[in-house]
Length: 449
Image (cartoon, rainbow, N blue to C red; front, side, top):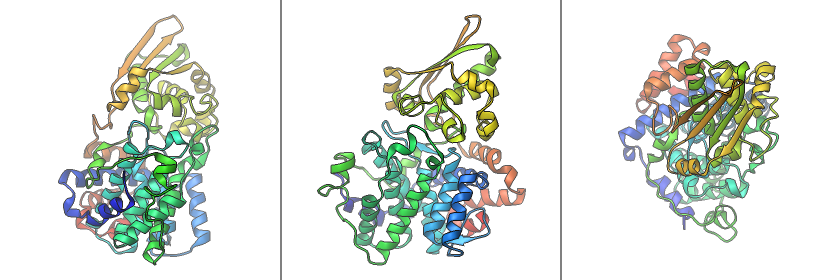
């Protein structure tokens, strides 16, 4: 049975020297991917709401609010900056069999606490490695989705652990931070079921805000439940069931995927497949009679209709969690970017008509393949004349089976953030992240202000 002390000792014992060169490189790619998404999200209404709320609470602090001429405390900076990374739903994911968290959700907390404590880039990367490892191990070994809890229930624990490291907490203080965070901040799955709204993209910001606050309470002497996981009526008893972890510094980062499309994680292979089919066969969407997707259980559950109606799509939050919408829009437009989530695009007659002829079903064999490490999809597009075209996918570009290297990450960065950055700032940001272990955290945040 995993214990709270086991997690605290892992945090204490992990150092930059424990990270392999491959782990360091992968972490830096995760930082660049996340920062690019954050830059593009600065003008979105929900992230503006978060910014206004932070400014209502604080007018200055020790941490940079990315993309703003303002600062705040580590707690509020973590909330704001994580919301930027998460809101567009273009961030990375772990593809555990029964859970799909987004480990880049931790970055806002890691950078805020590193900046606040005056840490080096090496220390920042160490904190990020700790967060990725803990969140990955929880996702694989202690999934919470079926019990009705949201995946940010893992995030508050991983972010608290990383924050404890960067704030310089000792073993018992770290144990307290993890105990406070994991006891007090368990999120409900209703965030992503039924009639989805914009909180879906902000919930992780709230989680890391609570994580940093928990770590700061522990730093200042607050005791927490030191038996969070193993205690009577504790986390394993109430939420996850008994589990074990094998914590290895940073290795779980290699299990993180890079999204190719602005779409929910489980849609990536299907979207890639339908675009390939549309382009190869030059399909006319006006002549499509039906689209049939056979997929794995998680995709059917989350975005295929298992947790609410996915055919009533009226806004961005509903669109990026609807397989019918995503497949219809991708077939018509031959792409799935931020443009496909503009309200006038979501509500246009062509995509609203086509999404209603999309059929999504689970194939147990594909579920087995997903649980073995693939992201399979089988798509049949039938035309009005009865002709059917088929494409089968094992995974997508960016999946751990086909990972995205620096060239692909930089191309994605340019596509999503390029128009928002001057060339010299873009180049300096990329170069700083590539060599983050030679810089201080404050040098990175200065470029994000």
